[in-house]
View 1: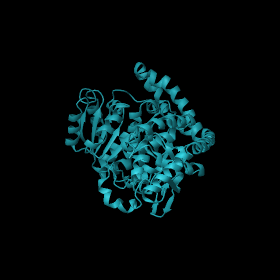
View 2 (view 1 turned 120 degrees about the vertical axis):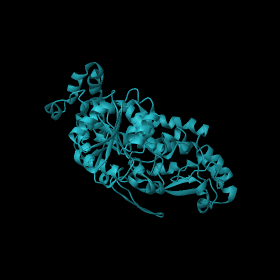
View 3 (view 1 turned 180 degrees about the horizontal axis):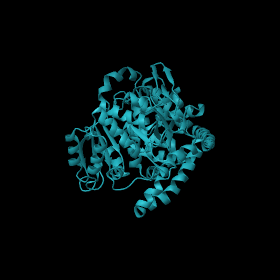
View 4 (view 1 turned 60 degrees about the vertical axis):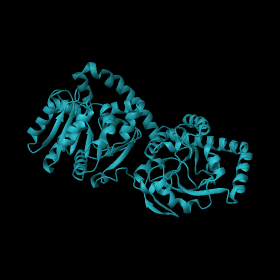
Length: 479
């Protein structure tokens, strides 16, 4: 995680929070987080986590709770939609002994094992005391209903707003959502299995009124009594998975035998990366690649550089270059250079055009911006206005490949979204620049930048640089 930093520049001062959970209920602000496999995981106790969930329900905070275990990590590697669903979680909880092993390999400190099976009864107990109602959706027919009855026997004051099974009923999504909303439930437990439940929650969160939704996998099977849980001894030594394998060998053999080997390999690689061994080599090679390609580029594009400068100067006699404060690695402000593509009074006219932005309120973008000059339209179309940033690369403020340098306004308005992007040096191009540029929503740009930082390598940088050429020629999203 990045350290807390105060940013000061000519447009103001802002404090960046180190936790992405700062925008939610106060209980989440009291919990720390740790990064593992490029995911932010809550670091706390079962009790404190349950309290945070109940407080979110009481405060009517829209909250998504998901879990990350060894099986989830294996799926996330190849399933981009699932990975995106996990990143959309308000809180992601470490589940199982595999995460503890991976944390030790990466020298990362986690809190308690926050698995859903242990968390569920604590949540039911606290919900009963605070008057919060629950809804269970998932599992085979009658399983969710039996789990609900068993929990009501244990906690007589627990209010079960409703149940629905995850087989024939989950195919009628509109009906399920209608049932959940009609029930008035405060906490909704979705047990459709990984990765279906996380994708389902991400797709339908906006349609569901309940403040808290949790993806809980096969939890209902245990509390309905359909499948017995492992003895406490096996759970205490991190071998609960072996018990589950004995219960359902045909269904779970691939997941636990081949899956555990695959996960351990990923955990070893993640640990090597997290301890900085790979990173030190990568940083050295990346800087060498930046300097070599930038110096070669400046030699070959020197005449183009001069021609663009003369055309800008000839059009309105204004300055050739435009400098703007951007936020770089670790929150350090720097001056980014560009060829001026707008009228000299563009900044003064911005307020008049703010309401016409084609994007959200964070980044102003307008396809037919009247402030753009004639030569500006041409150089923007082929991203030639960015060429002076090669000077920033030489200075070390930027890299050829990396997250686009954030505006101070972005960082101030959405610190929880910006903080992870500041973990790496900003670049001239990156994943979303070759995938549609301004056509990609801000939230998706952030996700793609974060994903790049977790998977960066010299080969990936070279691949993105090569992909940038056709992206520039097509001009998609360039405005």
